[in-house]
Length: 375
Image (cartoon, rainbow, N blue to C red; front, side, top):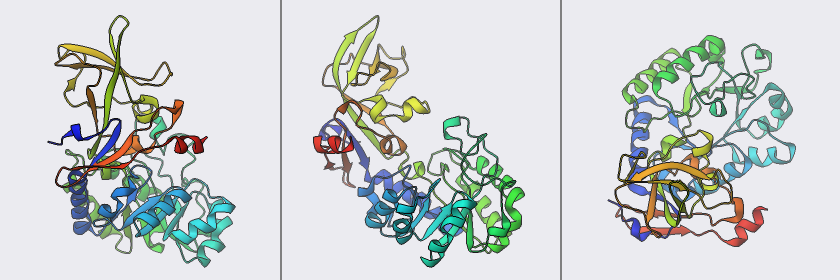
């Protein structure tokens, strides 16, 4: 059991042992299938842990120049890049960093083809298989009117000269059955082009490290696809599967107020530090807490900004909360941590890590200057 009393709140805390546990699962999948699994920085960018990830995975995938530079400088392995659009003043820098680059449209490919081929970067086109079981529109890359990827109707095979790969992304924290459905649609729409390319990127959203994910079925599906298309290198780029259940956000009760019910104001903000809870939306787990009314004392938990909706919902506890009590939010190291803001200028949570022996180390404490320079 980790000793959170070592942690100065507020703080995002990574557990090295749990991260390595996830890495070993992904490493096993790679060994049994020959698939490359790379870390998607959009979902997991805790760069101080990149040396650990580099022990297991061949590289990372970036969605911007900044992410590509971070991957190159801090992981130092393969860098794959996809962005909805590249710009003239950044494309040269991106190509200097990238090993693979995926273009979102044929117009972007035509615009930058000369530079990409001169840079000897492996180039791909993102396609839209027009199949998805993602329920939340905000996270559905294959939804109606999606700008992400080329549909079969808009595909231009006459422009494939120089293209070495196809890339699709249609999942969001899903099991292998969702991947099977996407693969069937992908092969139906684009299968006739697979013999002339070298790689296919299955994108992210694969919840491989989740306890109930059907990993044996995944191995079968990947090996069956490889048997059908032995010329292809398969790439997967999960983000949440890297950081799934590897760390917490440690908060503190800053004040207690009452307005028809008890309300605990924390020293973190839901909107600034846990935005996925409002976007998805989802209810995070809290160590020692339960649904309202299950335990004896129920509180509404709220953030410390002036936004009226900066509230998380109602939770119950065995004992009454006191100012200074720690509130430990589980599973806050992937997407949630990546999306944080400096809204309202409230103190941004520190960043820390428990090593293999359970010793806590504070890695970064945010400053006023960092807040100011963002504005």
